[in-house]
Length: 162
Image (tube, rainbow, N blue to C red; front, side, top):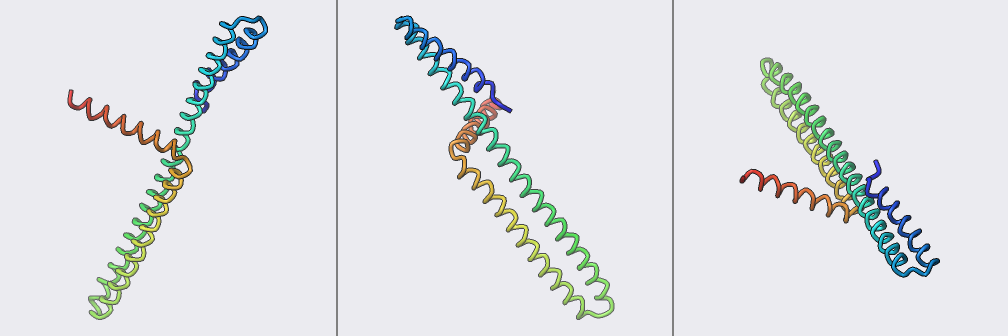
């Protein structure tokens, strides 16, 4: 989705260029200067629209990466819990028959749970790295996003006091 500031900025920039050229051709310093001013305004508005698009894109990608990391971690934890529960059930049934076997299953369940926890931690670190890469790739956009988030939080905090 293209920001409307980009469209209106490009139109103003083009109109300003045309007005500046017409002013130059007719010898009107006022039209020439006014055209250059409109051209600069249009370029600034276009740049602002591009920055908004970049921030929106970076925020969307960061949100996607964070959601993917959360989904993977949640799935890994669910799988670990299911697996650990299965192993614990097997251990309880065997404990009735042979006490020594129960301890082995419990250790197996613990080892598996530790392994899954480590996998979950790796997935979370991977997600954090992905977000970090987005911040490194779009530092200006990240700062703008952080500024908007801070501004929004400030508005929320201030609104609650009234």
